[in-house]
Image (cartoon, rainbow, N blue to C red; front, side, top):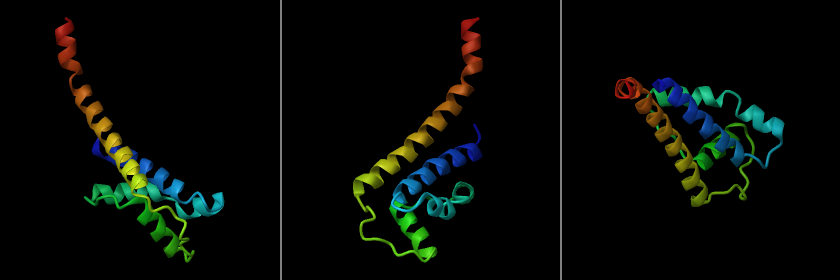
Length: 112
């Protein structure tokens, strides 16, 4: 797998986490706010940026759209830890798949 595919997968996981943070909004509003978020995040990652907190990103989206950020928007550290773990596991799994794919020719030789 290439780096761009890793960035796209990481961006997809992050975008889904942002959508979960915005679940208090109507589905149409969430779709409008997060339209194209995957490509934006993937491009930022390819430029060397790091991912912000999902809650902070969702709050910034709301502020940018002129929607009042409710006090009930979860700012739980547990949610941030879980979201961070999802991203790390996704990145680890992608790296493992690249590594294991590279071992295939060696396995063919051992089997023969």
